[in-house]
Length: 212
Image 1 (cartoon, rainbow, N blue to C red):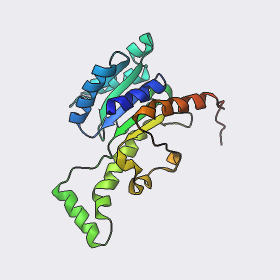
Image 2: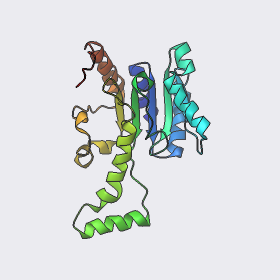
Image 3: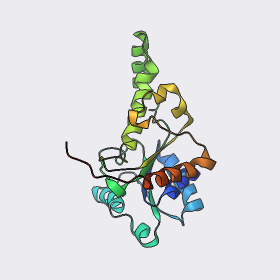
Image 4: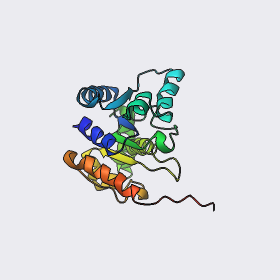
């Protein structure tokens, strides 16, 4: 099902995309499913554990250059990455280098003694302990990953949030104001919604940014 959503995203417009997952295991599982179902239609890259600097740069260069197969065969490029990892923060892929990202899950940290102590601390102060220990750190990772798409005032792109919990008020109130017109959709209509976004954008003439 996740692979189907990702395919709908990359079918919306040919280009470069990233998909972020809460664990290496889930990333690998979805990667295998996607490769089996849609691998011939899309150029795929996947983050490896313990990547060296040269490997990281090669991964990013594929996006900056558009991907060799994507250029030659007019395919989209889709990179599979770990949420909170080296490719979900601190990288700049401007313009056509990245036009979309999918975030799978809300990024909640695993339960551990340290976070439970933090939760109990805030609950004793009659505050939302779960939010401070888990929800806020998780959403921070989600927003950092999603923030890879729009890097300048000339960028345009799509962000796909794959988790039912993003519908809940506790999560929606943490969305940036730019997400006010977020659309909810299910798998059968996801591809159409994304295509409509790009088609609508084509009908709006772009104007050069004016200096302040």
